[in-house]
Amino acid sequence: NAGVTQTPKFQVLKTGQSMTLQCAQDMNHEYMSWYRQDPGMGLRLIHYSVGAGITDQGEVPNGYNVSRSTTEDFPLRLLSAAPSQTSVYFCASGGENEKLFFGSGTQLSVL
Amino acid sequence: AQSVTQLGSHVSVSEGALVLLRCNYSSSVPPYLFWYVQYPNQGLQLLLKYTSAATLVKGINGFEAEFKKSETSFHLTKPSAHMSDAAEYFCAVRGGGGYQKVTFGTGTKLQVIP
Image (cartoon, rainbow over all chains, first blue to last red; front, side, top):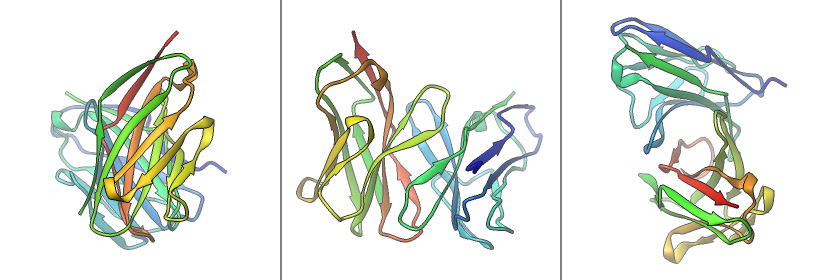
């Protein structure tokens, strides 16, 4: 089992560029989510999904879009990157009432 | 609404001493509570979880946590710290069961002094 796979591991963008962070899980989890981690602020929820076709906003959704067309995939899109989006991004998935499985993270720098 | 507050962004203990990391929660429904650990440059791993079955929860690596509803607390303890326990620890809450969203605290970095 690969678990939760995130790509890329590192990315540098210029302000205004767009990109998609990929997340895939092979555990048939209904719940998937994206967090950003910043020093002193812990993990803040960006968006989450409770199944294919169902998404909802977390604490810090502005500037990010998501979609869930399949159970396995939950990509995070930055439409117009800003320096404030420089962060480490984690994708996580989980079963009902169970723990979250985390990807290894994407370190994003926006110049 | 749900949230967790972790008291102390940095905690230092001597090797062999008691580890106590504090977490208080807020939830409008009976909560599911978790402690996760993050080692440098890695993702988060589950230490333990509370899902209303028992108030004292034992986790991996000798850690345990006690759910106290009257104090809205879920503090993490370990009787004797090891050097390998140095990491960042996160408390998290899920408001109710099923597929509710999970909210994390701001984290506590544990330093173990030899």
